[in-house]
Length: 152
Image 1 (tube, one colour):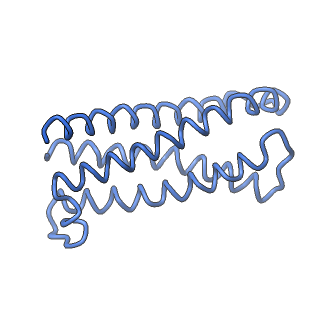
Image 2 (image 1 turned 45 degrees about the vertical axis):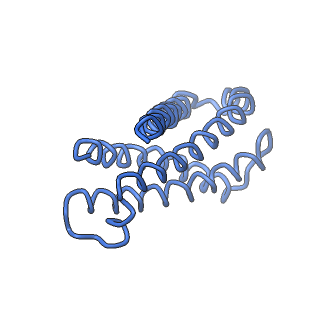
């Protein structure tokens, strides 16, 4: 069981690095590419590759996170909070991961449907808003992951 736990932890860590690193890269790319024409040249090529990679990373994060949560008994703290630091960190991280997953789904669907096409104003607002939300949620989720790792 120790080998499986360590393997899942390493998978979780590598996927988190990939997920957050990719998010930071795309955020910087979005800020750096102010020219609409440059965006239209870059995003249709990078977007689909990045999107599928991030989707696989998120699924791997969720699977490994569920395994680790079960292994360490964190679901019991999630369902029956006791006011401890670890209980609060688990609850906060779970809430943020749920919001992040929904934001990612919204962003992925819009990006997939509109790749290489002109977006409506609503699609643009939802896509950019979810992207920005994902970026900031990653930072908070990483904070709670560090707290959990320090306690465990």
